[in-house]
Structures are given as C-alpha cells and as structure tokens.
Image 1 (cartoon, rainbow, N blue to C red):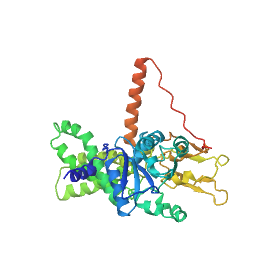
Image 2 (cartoon, rainbow, N blue to C red; image 1 turned 90 degrees about the horizontal axis):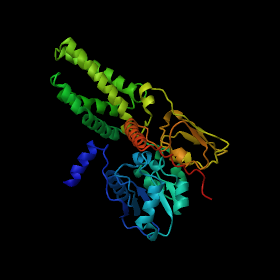
Image 3 (spheres, rainbow, N blue to C red; image 1 turned 60 degrees about the vertical axis):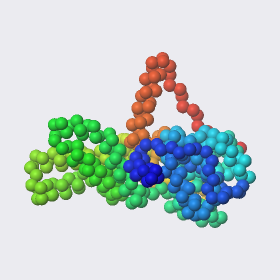
Length: 393
C-alpha cells in the first residue's frame, strides 16, 4: 500500500525532494570484482536503478550519495551532487573493503557537478561516466565498449512520450500549488474561475508537454503561446456552436487560455531534459548560450563528447580535437566545462548551475537572502571556490 501511495506521489510531485537512505547497497550477489555504481538518494531514482540491475541480472555494488532527495541531474546542477559528495560517500561507505579494484561508474548526468580528475586525485578512484539512462548499463558493461561508445543514443538524453506525459502531470500539479490561492481570491469577483481553471491548467500542461516536440516556435513562451492560440481557436468554435456562450465571456476565456498556456509553456522546460535554457532565451526566443572549443588548448581526450547529453561536440577523426557542431542543442548544463582537463572550453554561462526557470527563481531568492544577510552583518559575500581544472599527474 505504501509503495502505491509513493507511486501516486511520484506521478504528481516530482518537484519536491523525496530522500531515501544514503550509503552502500548490494544488488544481487556482488563479489570483489563486481562493478561499483553511484546514484543519488532520490527514492524513485534508486528504485529504478535497482529494478534495471535486477532485470538485466547485474550483480553490483550501489553507492547512494546524499543529495537531499534530489534527482541526479538537478542535484548536480544545484550543487548537491559534487566531487565532495562522492569523496565523502566513498570514504564513509566502506566500499574500499568490499572490492579489489578502484573503478567507479557515475551517471552521465552527474557530470555537471562532478570533476573526475579531481575525484581521482582526492580519492584514488578512477571514475567513468556511464550511459545517460540506466537501461543502457548492460550494454555499457559489455566487453565490446568501443561499439557501445559509438552509439550516440546511449549518450544523448531523450524525452519520450511516456516521460512527457508524466512531466505534463507534474507541471499541472505544481502550477496549481502556486496558483490555486490567487484563483480562489479572484473567484470572489469572477464566479467559478477556480474550478473551471483547474482542469484547464491540467489540460494545457499536458498539451504543452506531450506536444512539445511538434509545437511551432522555440521552447518557452513561443511554444506556449502557439498552443494557446490553437486551444483557444477550438474553444471559440465550440463555445459559439455548442454552448452559445456570450461574445464577451468567450473573449475573456480566450484571453485566459492564451495567458495560461503561455505561462505554462515558459515553465515547461523546467520539466524537460531537452531545454535547460535561461530565462531570457525562454522569453525572447533568442539563443544566447555560447560554447567554443579553443583548438590550441584541446588535448583530444574526448571527455566533452562523452559527458554532453545533447551531442553538441564532435571529434576530428585525424587530430582527435573536439569542436562544437550543434550549438543550438546546448543546454548550458556545464558538464563539459566542469570536466575539461585543460580549460579548453570558452563559454558565457556559469557551469554547474541549473538554469531552468524554476531553479532560476529559487537561486535568485537564495542569492537575495545571502546578500541581505551579508549587508546586515556588514561583510562581503565569500568568493566562489576555484574549480579544479588541471588533470592529475
């Protein structure tokens, strides 16, 4: 019964952390040569990882890192899954006494917050980034890894229909949490606004998410506005034929539909793994993110291509140097910047910081609170710690 309640919650409330116990877990019957994997302590993620390992009959040691119950990508972008986090769990879990090797497989989407060069220097563990999805782990662990690494779909994050439906439900549920009180207040003057708007928000949220790949315009306001026009056109047709609604009431609800859909379209990238653009990109529809590889500094390790979830980079077959080939797909996650061993990647955004609309608002509020606290104390905000950038000897 408890698992069913959890599943219902995960269908609606994925915005909220849901931690499970961190530490070392055995999956199957691992021995001293079995692979060591790491994941976050978001319960849904741990459950999916264990199910996938059991389904593929993989005996493994699973390190569950303390990320405050946040999923891997958001934890890495939000500073909860970092090099420090992994060093800590490696030292406290006792895993060093369980295996004869020192090789750790990390989720690819943790790369935005984890520097494998620093991790190896500090812990002695050689860390590799596994596939973008746990369902590809069996292929990754296969001996023929060269064939695996050539399959780009194992490195590129996707947004299939099932995930778009679930994220649409979450978008609607969490939007209602913020909007229900204003709706109730306005309903004092506009009778029935709140209960009519509730199903409307869920409908528009599902459409914004499910149809995200096909709606015209760029991700954000443009896609939401396009959907609003489409839905309002259908509404006007029905209201004037089947419902015989008054013209002014029809006009009011038409504008309300467009407004709600535009807002939901703006926030939808918060629930998508494909578009982690900043606020100005989502509002203005203009690509501002810029990433560039400096050829003279590139050492040809190919790590930027491995950690990138959007296939932004490609390596020259002869020189092995990387280059940006798909700038429009860049999500500004910062994984390439975090793990480049020679500072060869120029960019115009902060690495290791989630830039989706929801996190932008949260981070702005936190930043404002810090500045206010510092001003009251009469001090200055501490400078950010310098990132480790050089490869270990």
